[in-house]
Figure 1 (cartoon, helix red, strand yellow):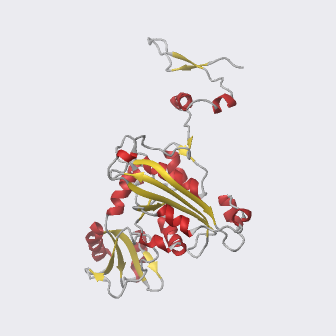
Figure 2 (tube, rainbow, N blue to C red):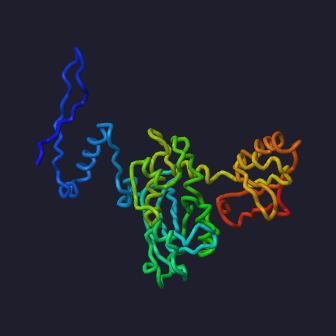
Length: 341
């Protein structure tokens, strides 16, 4: 067994006092470390990170209480449902093979209190799983064979939810609504699009990366693990030293009215310009469209008038709120009775 190591807080230069030396016993065996108290493990983490050469990630999934307060004594608590699915592929026609739901309590300030319910179920898609999906998720044909997700149980767990959240809700919501139509009436938000991660200097919005930036890791691409990690992520501060949580930022954006705007009859030569502006092409309607917040609508019309059209023209749009946002029920083509501005 080696002797306790010494940590030197700083080298002594000419004319400087001798550096402070702290004895740190790192002789703890693996078995002893596994049985150490959370306080001792935290102390070891601080020792490693203080060297500037290490960054220690904590495993996610064990935490169910994020704000140690008697939530029954808190007025105006809301119920959120963090949802994730694993599917047979990346197309909206693919089948769900695993559904995860984590129900948590939060307040109007975006403080997350605790997890109050969970659901994790497999479903047989009726055909062999693609090898790529098996490798990505670790889910096998044997695990899903003959299994079915209980509609009754899903409805029970999701009942009373004020908000359903998914990481990439534009993918999850259409698939979930198709399998469980009662989710159509829910308000939805997205922890990719509705959180301003760029304020924290984060550009990569993959769940695993966001977790790492917040000091934890998890076994990804399993529905329940993704959900628990998502709730933990939302409970954290949006940026270091910030009081606003990621959930508070998401709630603020979820409440904002949105607009789906169609750049109707735009000149062909403007296609690259529109694409760079985050417009998407609807091949059936042969028109470009994009989603934005209602308070950005006028500025976008001004941009279109100055960059795409010879002059300002009345363009079709549709108002969008959280009950419609990210749903496949949002039309790709402008409705005949669409508002114009």
